[in-house]
Image 1: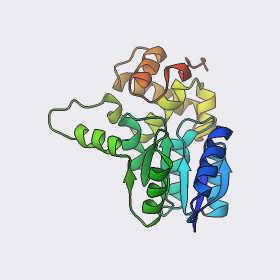
Image 2: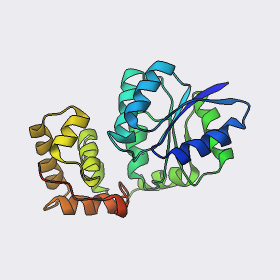
Image 3: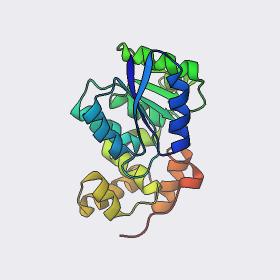
Length: 220
C-alpha cells in the first residue's frame, strides 16, 4: 500500500483527490495538509511514501515547502500537482528534487500512474510539460530571464507577486528584512524592472502567478 499525503489549500480539491485515489486498492491517503507548513510537519511525523504538493498556497507555499521537506529527508518523494503549465515551475521544482509534475487537468488514471512510478523510484512528468522542457533546451531558444534568478530570489519574487511585504517575507523565509530588501534590489536589476509593478507583470507573464492573484506588495 502506497501512503500518500495530499497538500492543497482548497478543502474541496483535497477531498476530491482523496476520494478518487482511495478507489485504488494500492493507495492509502494517510493525511491532508492545507499549507506548506503543515505539509512539512506531517511529512516528518508520518513519513509518507509520496506527497502530492500544490504550489500556490498561503504561507511559504509549495516551492519552499518542497525544498524544506527534501532538505530534511532527500529520499522523500514529491509530486507537484498544480495549475501551472509554464516551464518556469517544473524546472525549479525538479531542480530541488521533486520526482513528478502533474497539472490539475490530468485524469485520475494518470495521477495513479505517476504515484506508482515515483514510489518505485522513478520520475513522472506530464507529457506536455516534458515536451515544453525539452523544447526549451533546443539551440536558438532565447533564455528565460527568470532562469537567471537564484533559488532564493525566485522564492522572494513569488512572494512579492502574492502581495507579501518585506516583513512578511522575512518571517516566512527566516531572513532579516534587510536581506529581503537586498533580494528585491537584485530582482529589479536582473530582470531589468523599474519597480514592483514590473516584477508582478513579469511574474504573471512567466506563469508564476495568475493575474487575479497578483497584488502589489505593501511598503515595509
